[in-house]
Length: 432
Image 1 (tube, rainbow, N blue to C red):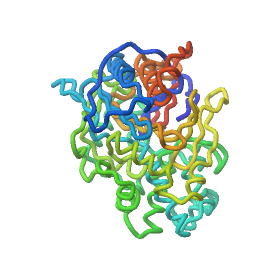
Image 2: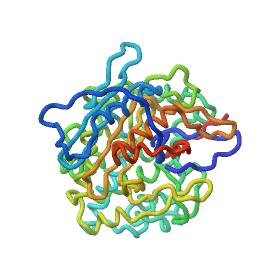
Image 3: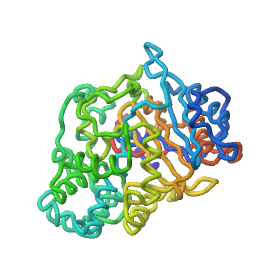
Image 4: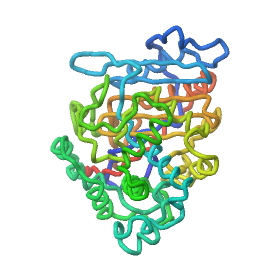
């Protein structure tokens, strides 16, 4: 989620998080979205401008996004919309209730499960990882890295995705194709992460690493005696009342879903579908599927105190700064959740991206105003000579929708001359 400086002729970023979170905005052209059932009609005072949301979401599709779907909520009022196609060959349309791979939003679910163990006294946030998983990390690191450092990405452990998909280092999708049905164990993923270059000393600096959350899953299994995905399903997903959220047992997304198109910054042309994929490579770092409505309900339950006691929720919202290449704080990362400040206030949530699918879900501090957005084309931007993803028309349109949905039309109408800020969360290296 930070725009890290990429080495000259060096690396682009791809993998488990969203390729671009948009924190500035632009005005978008007009278009349309699907109607809600009569029972979901918002009241006149709900603060949801349905026509503006329709136009703004369709503008994302018109800018080049194949398909996108969204759920917006303001108190008791909600709006569902979709624009574009789920399959570029058949032109099958998307709809708002599609089941979607939400990538690193999984990290919020995993963090909640760990904090439930903190509440039960089985885990201490500032205890070393070696207390629960002796021998998993090299001796010194196991004693210095704490559970908190895993959850807020300050452990300094590198990311495993380049090890799992080595062809990406050569700008080739070959390993993506080769690994479609490969089962990768959590221990193998941790090994890849430990073999990757370290990003800093424990506790020194924030650096996004999916390895942290695979280790968190192993820790959860150790202290509960239950498989991590099974525990999260029973004590987080079901407790939150989510009907369409799960860790799939097969490479197929359960329920109605879109294809998942990956462009890899133009290295896959035309973009290729990766909707059928063994997600063991993501596990407790990114394998959850959900609908946009389920994501809104999940964060509403979480922020409203339905999943954690106040003390643990406060720990979750204790953040470290995430800075850009110039040292400016662009967001604040807590324990599996982060805060972003918009013109209308502070919002909490997470983004996610896997090959071909991106998601973002944000909620106001009181959980009243919410947005969840899914889309089916990833890394559509082009890279400049230094390896930076350059803003695309999709980014401007998505940025406009993001702010309209959370802040209303008055905030979105304030034009900005600055481009959207791209905040990659991946650590896959793509050499130019």
